[in-house]
Image 1 (spheres, rainbow, N blue to C red):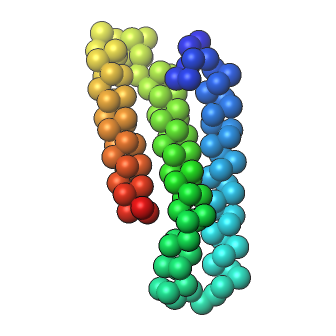
Image 2 (image 1 turned 135 degrees about the vertical axis):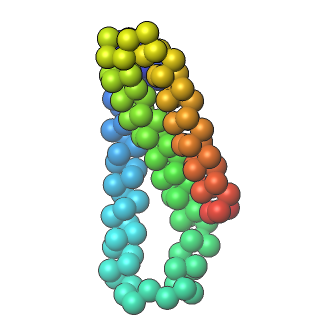
Image 3 (image 1 turned 120 degrees about the vertical axis):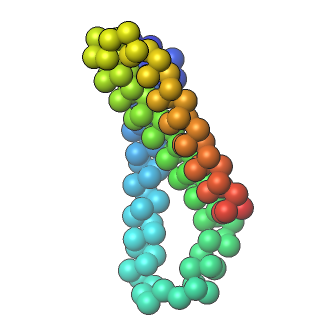
Length: 116
């Protein structure tokens, strides 16, 4: 089956790599919060003003976008089909993909604008 990135293998790798990035970001923030408790505004602001953290957050946001897009695409291609929904299946699937792409794109771009 042809995937978003050309093949199912590429999609599989993209999801796994993005998962590792998401996990590493979560673990880093968890470690930061635990090791610097109690957190105040100046400490939190200082963390996100650091260029390395901005780059890491950008990588996280892009990984999040890729991960969610592949996940929503898989849901649409599995459940919003002609076999399950009849004649309207393709139109519903197309509408679903457009809405998901718009939401994921807007959230990712908006988050990047906030960080930078």
